[in-house]
Image 1: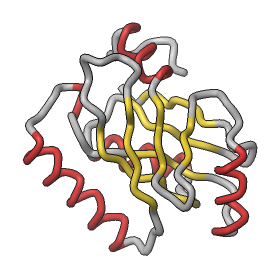
Image 2 (image 1 turned 180 degrees about the horizontal axis):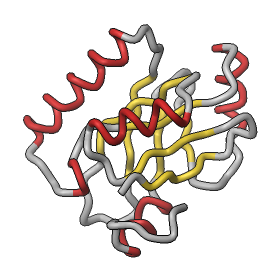
Image 3 (image 1 turned 45 degrees about the vertical axis):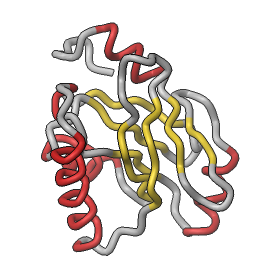
Image 4 (image 1 turned 135 degrees about the vertical axis):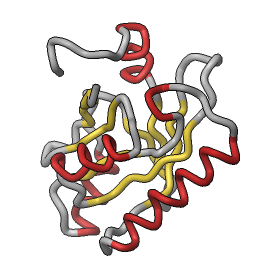
Length: 142
């Protein structure tokens, strides 16, 4: 995590406590800094060693209306499809009740470098990246 960030500490804590749900068969959840056996299983199924959990909703952490967020998600989905990336739908479900869950995508095989690029393009404060160990890490972008 960078030593200096524009993201306030309370928001970072909220991101760290968010449940990152993945809609699969069966569904599973990712938690920051906790190994995920279902993610390891997904790695084997997709023959990958990394993944990224990303969204285009609520740029810079500023809430948008549902229609605007849906349009942003469609643009993100189109980019993933154009690059031939497979993905599963997901939902960033915050622990705090004052935030609305964000539609998201888990992208098997998404590298940290490309996840950062996408996150910045869609003006996100942070992304979640998972390496070989299947331990989700919060990666701040601002």
